[in-house]
Amino acid sequence: MTSVDLSQHGSLRERKKARTRAAIREHALRLFREQGYADTTIEQIAAAAEVSPSTFFRYFPTKEDVVLRDDFDDRILEAFDRQPASLSPIAAIRAALREAVATFTPAEWEEFHQGAGLSVTVPEIRARTLDELSRTIEMMADALARRIGLTADDLAVRAYVGAVFGVMMSVLSPDALAGADVGEQTLRRMDEALALLEAGLPLAPPRGTTPR
Amino acid sequence: MTSVDLSQHGSLRERKKARTRAAIREHALRLFREQGYADTTIEQIAAAAEVSPSTFFRYFPTKEDVVLRDDFDDRILEAFDRQPASLSPIAAIRAALREAVATFTPAEWEEFHQGAGLSVTVPEIRARTLDELSRTIEMMADALARRIGLTADDLAVRAYVGAVFGVMMSVLSPDALAGADVGEQTLRRMDEALALLEAGLPLAPPRGTTPR
DNA sequence: TATATTATGAGAGTAGCTCTCATTTAGATG
DNA sequence: CATCTAAATGAGAGCTACTCTCATAATATA
Image (cartoon, rainbow over all chains, first blue to last red; front, side, top):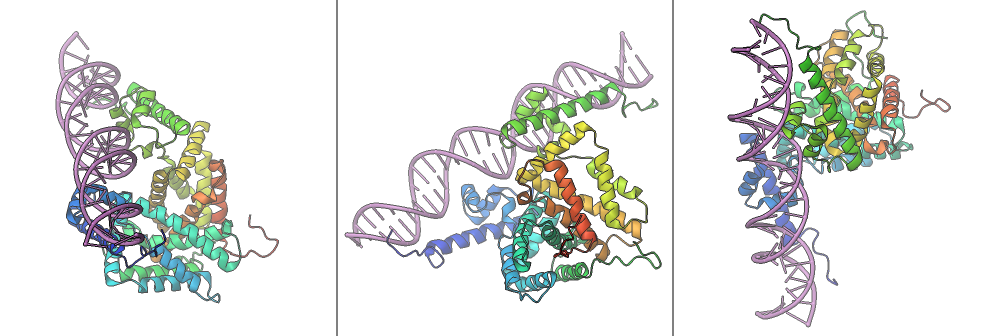
């Protein structure tokens, strides 16, 4: 009670927990890759990570959650808040994306890579990913509203942020990614797509026919 | 084999199936409303609809699917294809949405109403709804590409459709809808948000100018 | 009426997920 | 160092969504 709170980072307990969590995730992703998501049971994952099934659920509430990148959104939002006010919102978001990605360690990048593949492939995970995305939109709406001095429930703000994420998602849609290679190229295309949004989504119609 | 195919609509079998399907859905929605989604079991639904649990799964692959409006997307896409080429893509989408909604019978509307509530309230259903939406957008990308003479994998097309998707999605987020009347209001806000997108996503509307 | 088709029900089995309780392990205290 | 406390784990029981198989009943066709 009177003791110093060691539990934050350096303590043995915390380090062990982190290692266990990482182990579960790594083995899970490996098994998913090797035998598919549906054909991999929690029991197998637990066995591979040398924990009990009970422990699996203590670290991840559902099987899907093993795949979901938890902290990526936070990093983007932080980076977004750091951008100078002189940038347009979309420019700030593009910069934030770049910065957030730059903080990835190779291991994290690999994880992200695999996760993105599953987010496109496995229906349940895709659905969850979208749901998470919706939460991120919510937070980004807050950040944007703060930035430009409107309220977060303003429809214009919501629509704006929604469009940004929709554009980002459009690059990730299943048809766009035939090969499993969700990597740098995807991010580049994401950036391009955001540039298009900033330019007002020109559709470049066939010559002569200008829609509207 | 040589006989006329009666199985389409008028046959006794088909009528019975339609009635059973409707009964299951109605009782399910009622029970969800009365005791909540999670606290309602398939067994209860089956019992209420006077079928066996096996039969439930023959009509609906998962519990979530009872809530999902299945044919709504098709109606939207059909309506979209019917729109005159003179309309801008977003205008066409908005018109298609309106037309599709207009084809609702009162019973369907009531169903949609309840479903919309659950789509916002229950996480699993919300996730599935977004996933369905994403599928719709994929098909919309095809339709749009056809409409303006580009290919569906064109980045501009994808970004455009993605923005539409994101904007619609932003309206569906839980925080945006505290109140009860999810049905009409949601659609109205969705339409407003699309109008904003069409106007280039103005973030600070000129004073006095309330967008639509 | 006889026969082929299709819908249904019963029941067994799998796996995700929750909860409880006993056991172990790390950290704090004397 | 011994002890006490609190947290982490494991074991196991239980619920429910979902799948599969097979027998039976209902409907269509001849």
